[in-house]
Amino acid sequence: MDFFGKKVLFLGAHPDDIELGCGALLHHIAKKTDVLCVTLSDNQKNPDLKKVKDEHIRSMKVLGVPEEKIVFGPFSTRVFPNSRQDILEYFLKFRKDFQPDLIFTHSKQDVHQDHNTMTDESLRAFRGITVLGFDVVRSSHGFFPHFLVEVTEEDVHAKIKALAEYETYRNRYYFNAELTRSIMVRHGALAEMPFAEGFDILRIVGQFGK
Image (tube, rainbow, N blue to C red; front, side, top):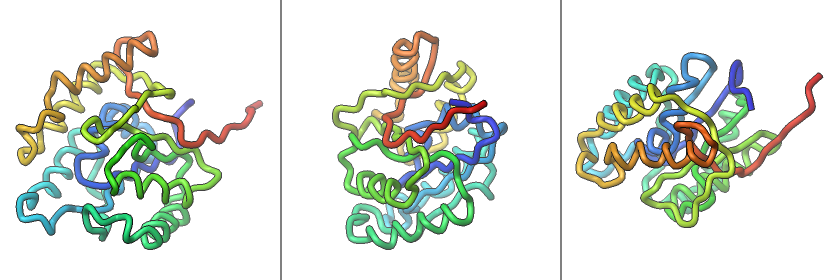
């Protein structure tokens, strides 16, 4: 699959999800194609997470995503299942306005209720468009990547550096640099290359070119 020249929409439930799931890939393509990164909740209702919105913006900057390509949605963390129809309609606006060629969102193997809800609504909103699911290791159950994308060592370093912008989560095990690198080494081994990020296939829409 060639990402060059495509319009790629990244969908995360909370600040940090996109970076954790596919930060290296995002760094690899951000300056080569048209990307838009949408996070449905900014977590600002939680007094312990007041810094994460700014941390997300700084993290995305490390990955090469300017602030005008970052969108925060109006939804409340942990209760996405109560807002299914609103999330669907929110996604339909991006389908109309951004017209993406490719979607990245949470894996179907994710057990977090917010992640799971937005994946279901992504598949409804973006019918007829390829949708790939990224893994957030803390909340995955049985994830195996059937779609592998090569990334470089520079991309790996950028992802680790981007995650380091989250002072709020500095001591969380899933922000550990060695863990982050090891996942991309494993996915690289599956693809017989040094590093890769892995996704599950939620929907592939293909056509024969001339």
